[in-house]
Length: 110
Image (cartoon, rainbow, N blue to C red; front, side):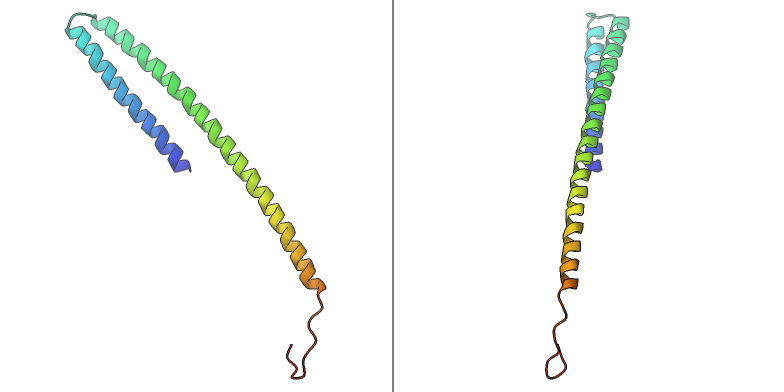
C-alpha cells in the first residue's frame, strides 16, 4: 500500500518537472519572439514554480492524511475482528473442556 502511494506521489513530482520544463520552453519562445522580456519571463517562471510547489505540498498533506485515516480505520477493524476471534476461541476451548472424555470401549480404545 505504501509503495502505491509513494509511486503516485513520485509520478506527480515527475509530472510537475515536465510541466515546469514545458512552461520554461514556452516562456523562452516568447522571449525569443520579443513578446516578453527575459526578466519578466523569469518572474513568471518563479511564480508558476512557487504555485506548483505550494499545490503539490497541499496535495501531499491531503494524501498523507487520507492514508493515515485509511490505515487507522483498517487497524481498528483488524483489532475488532481479532477480539471477536479470541472470544470464539475461548468459547470453543471452554466447550471442549466441559465435554467429558469418551468412555473406553471393550478393547480399551476410545
